[in-house]
Length: 121
Image: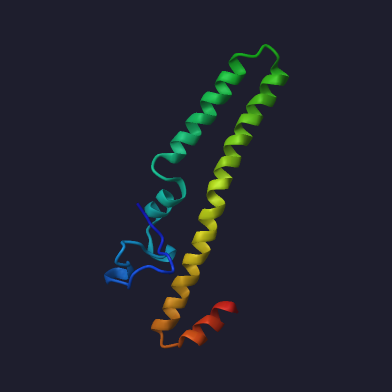
């Protein structure tokens, strides 16, 4: 599983990874990115929930207008929960990208002040 590095992560080890086995976002592979965003089997769970909920809603209601409204409500609730999960992930990804860029500037010989100023531009 992909774990993004925290600002307080231990010193960098070999291969760009830290001692706590974390890495910055630009350094992780596509599979690790998907695992970070959707957890293990998370996307299958969400799709299954939507399909089961919509099927049950549509099959148990004689009134199609009400059925479609309930199905849309169910899908909307699932999408809202997914959004509430992805917003903190996106914030953490921004922070990880900033840490990576700062580290790259420091490796290129810029001081901490110059790296911080370059990050603000």
